[in-house]
Length: 378
Image (cartoon, rainbow, N blue to C red; front, side):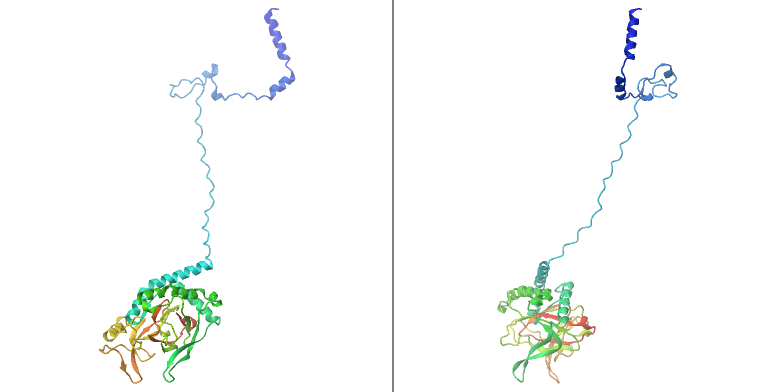
């Protein structure tokens, strides 16, 4: 046969002789995948029957070649990051005992500096000065609670005072009716009443230097002092007329009181009474006289600071304007010019210990312990 036939026969024999192993190897290869029909070139008779039925931008002619790829789908929206729920701010760290002490003492020092000008002006004008709301109400309540805890705990005893006895010519000690008191001397008592003790220390560290600047001759100490926490428990408890410093070896010069009432009702009494015209000669104070007294008495008739005349601790009588002052002889004694000062919580009262005669009017605790009259005296 011709050469080309021999060639074809050899090729067929070669194709039929492929080993099974080769076929197995070919089967393991990646199979060919036919492209989608939409993406292949359409030719031949079948292509003629696939003409587009709609005329487009090509004038209705079939487009030969690969069809345009569809636009990619929009990317998925970014996944929202999970946010942890907002945490509440941590509670403030409780103050330490040292921080509470320092804060209270700083508050008292600042309060004394703020009150001093009005307090000293009053002393210069009439022998005593009064400043209201010297300490914040919440501070007064804390100090009052400490004071009442001392009373309930048995740390307070019947209060004693001194007065001059004309018959014997000596200073006598007497007990005040239904009045308890204690001295704040530190030690174990400090831990039961820290704010009361710190008040005393802070006031003594601050006020004397301000007084000495105003009156250098006073030479008040910023370390040496006495104090007394006292409570009038009603039933007419009162203080008789007296000086705080009756002379002798007593070194007291200035008295400062802080009242610790929750509230004060005029029906409870307990006003502090100052006797002007009985004060000793003092170059630092000029007691008001005549028309000046009348002006004081009528300036604020509805105030809890009242001026008038009285013999002792009886109710005040309106001051009459006279050229010679308000003194007048009565059936049972001399009428004196006086000021009644209500024991309002947070009120500071200061006066000269050795020249100003004073007393406390009968006190009536109409609502029990809540109406007790508390005063811290330095």
